[in-house]
Length: 93
Image 1 (tube, rainbow, N blue to C red):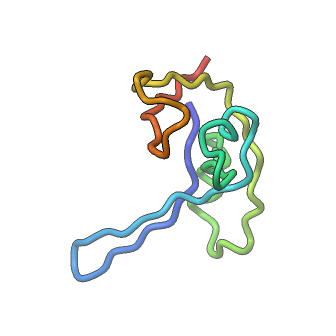
Image 2: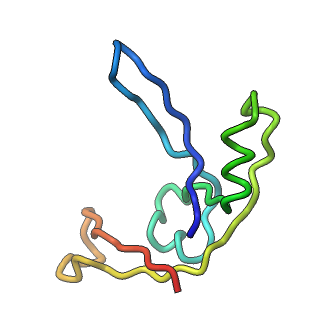
């Protein structure tokens, strides 16, 4: 199991806004996010706890965790030559 680094805030009462923080891609994710070359920042449980407890984002040094994943194309009928992207499931191996 791993965690993703992100930021969130409440606005207009109970509405929530959030974003997932990204970093440079690893080899697998470079094939999936090949136009922007980014991937979510993956954290271990210990790193996630530290990330959540730090007072300032600037004091947190983002670690590089490369979980062992395989990508499964859930829409193989979509051609690689189209502008549309396929839905991909990431599975831990």
